[in-house]
Amino acid sequence: MRDLRLDRRFPSSPRFWRSSVRGPWFTSVLGIVLLGGITVLFVTGLLSYAAYNPGLSPVNDQTPDKGILGFYLFSWPTGPVWLYRFTQGTHVTLGITLVPVLLAKLWSVVPRLFALPPARSLAHALERISLLLLVGGALFEFTTGVLNIQLDYVFPGSFYPLHFYGAWVFFAAFVAHAVLKTPAALRNLRGLRDGENEDEDENEKENEKETEDENEDRKEQGAGESGLVAPDPAEPTVSRRGALELVGGGSLLLFATTVGQSVGGPLRETALLAPHGGGEPGGGPGGFQINKTAVHAGIDARETSGDAWRLVVSGRTGQVRLSRADLLALPLHSSSLPIACVEGWSTADQWWRGVRLRDLAVLVGYDDPPDVLVESLQRHGAFRRAALRANQVGDPLSLLALFVNGEDLTHDHGYPARIIVPAAPGVLNTKWVARMTFGDL
Image 1: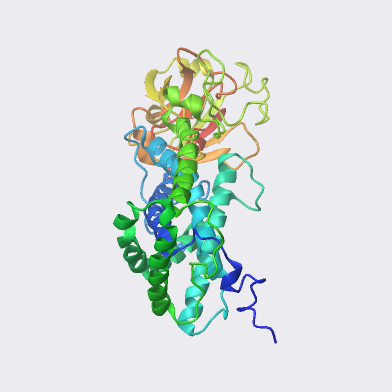
Image 2 (image 1 turned 180 degrees about the vertical axis):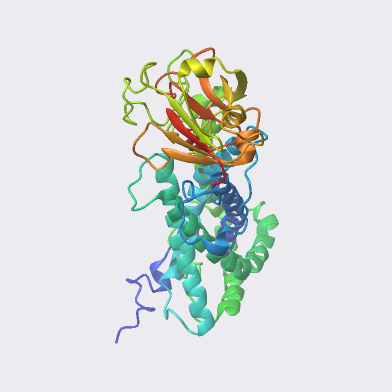
């Protein structure tokens, strides 16, 4: 029977893999970068999930049976007003920036995925399972994240629970892998100082050094496991340092063409890969980014006319119906706030004017602001209804906005009235508001 470990035509043979770039040092550098970057991604991802108020009510919480995975949830603060813009902008921009590093890391270790036998012991089997979860989880999280950024929901089910559970599976495997591999990675990086002074012509010497390191690594992981250094390498076309520069250059390019969507200003012109990059859309008071137009949301202009539209506010003392003229007769206040969305994009600060949410709560019997359920004229979509916590309702900057930048709201920006809350995800700033129900949710 043919031994697939010896036949170089099969990926289970070490001689199938001939790149001279692969090696412990190259893999370790990428691994250390991912160790820091993915940790930041996980933390900012959890913060994004907390910002959606998942513990408040089933309206916002679309994650079934999260159990102990919701241990960290807390009331999302309303200040600083740029908080969500910063945390989610960091999450999305860093995630895109790390894509070349992740792909290079997976490429560098692919020989080990085909190593035979698949399990030499129980400990080795657990390590291989964790590796499969790590690779599968990484590809799933990065793929669904990039698709969500581009508003391409081609995967089954809701993005939020899929990404949430996928993140926990991936990060658990990531932590296990980091615990097992970080000591070896740090040992491999000890040769970095010497490698900084080597020319490309010294690749053979570097390979010999890495082969020695690989032998040590094999001893730690068990005899017979396929290594990273090719035993029969092909003629090199690029040095390891050159390969790292290529990966770093790709990451910098993605960073430069993404970061402007959340930073704004002149850099927005460089955000070519972002769904709302490439400059401000149009001009005038309503010339800033949106996800859904009124037409896309199915909003009929006849529903928002002065004769037809009424805001229904319910609470402890009953219900009131307010026309736009009634709202204009109430005390009006102003807030300078951005809109920041889960896709990573955000607007510059816009000047909003309207009625404070806490003043509307007073109309239905609440001196101390309670939670509120906000419902839109929009009839379909996951966030046509959104819940806000009491601290958000009570913030003086939280408004039922009637104007933006000195003019009436445009239909695409939520006319006749929309919610604007500091530091909240954009989908909680409900447009085309039709009903507000105050009370414990």
